[in-house]
Amino acid sequence: MSQKTVLLVYSGGLDTSICIPLMKQEYGYEKVVTVTVDVGQSPDDVKMAAEKAKIMGTEHYTVNALDEFVTDFCWQSLQANGEYQGYPMSTSIARPLIAKKAVEMAEKLGVTAFAHGCTGKGNDQYRIEFGIRSLMPQATIHAPVRERNMTRSWEIEYAQKNNVPIQQSLEKIWSIDENLWGRSIEGGRLEEPDFIPPEEIFQWTKSAENALNEGIVIDIQFQNGVPVAINGDKASPSQLVLKMNQLAGDNGVGRIDIMEDRMMGLKVRENYECPAASVYLKAHKALENLVLTRDEIRFKSIIDQEWSRMAYEGLWWDPLKEDLESFITHTQKRVTGNVKLKLYKGNITVLGRKSDWALYSEDLASFDTTTFDQRESTGSVKNFGLQARMYHQLLKQRV
Ligand code: ARG
Image (tube, rainbow, N blue to C red):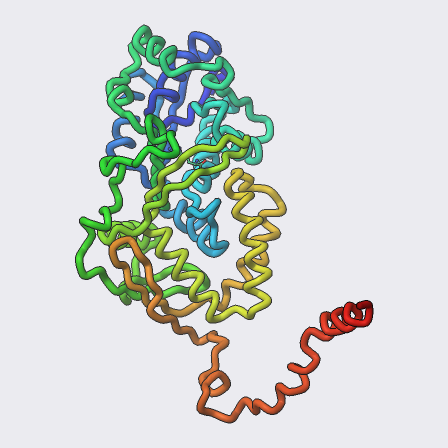
């Protein structure tokens, strides 16, 4: 393909749609290729993107990346207990995959120029551009919304002048980002930290009032730190997430409303729905607590935190992240077993856990056996905190 072709990472929304005429009129490209990566956003949005691309005459590709997203991104995040400021990361772990799929397509077509619709205020510009540059160092990347300091009203006017279909974008009050691991809703009055979110923003979860009255008990089978079956039924990775989103969402599980610190320091109010991720993360931790040693758990929480920070920033192909993952992957070899939980009106309660790798021995812990001879503890108890005892002795001598 000629040098005058640009590949636009395309969602179908207002920001990315106006990039299509802009790339020709202002950036001098002859041809625009649009790529929409399906990571589990609403199927209507994927279809709508393809339709709009057709209307605007781009060469359009829809890439289905559902199973790859779950296997290589959601599961990796689960093994790392991935969360940022108390919510399971979802937008951030999809961006590297979107960048990867865009680069794969560009390589196939012989294109080295990219465009994306990220604004200059958010995190996604870092994640997308880092992803593309890591996988194609010679890439040229355009970010028109940021580069031209665009406002929404300018974008609407430009769209109307250039026959960009935007009816849907105008009707949408909320800015929504979705993938299988979570759904984020922001914008409009939701940005006000004390505005009570209206029920209509939630699509995947019922309110506690409307959730099933009895709740449900589920059993999750894990192998090497990732789920393989729900209630004994094995399913593909993406099916396991879809099914759990449904089960947990029906029970009002997974709504999170937080103040979030973006990479640049902006504090923003965010609402999330992440039913499956919330359940799997809780179950995964419960199983880790059964099979890992106390020191592994303590040290892994540091590794997990560092991994989560890097994932939040989109540093997916950073060597340190790979180093952290060697540690994480090694620990997950024993995170195999089952966890039973109750989902009830927004709550997740662990009811039980079992594993062949359990570091629990009934014989040792029970109050009723003598295998663990209590008398042997005497010496270690006496010398426990030896240095603190010396310190207090010294203090006493001084008065
Ligand atoms: N603040 C979150 C993040 O940086 C989510 C942003 C999602 N975007 C949206 N338009 N809802 O990962």
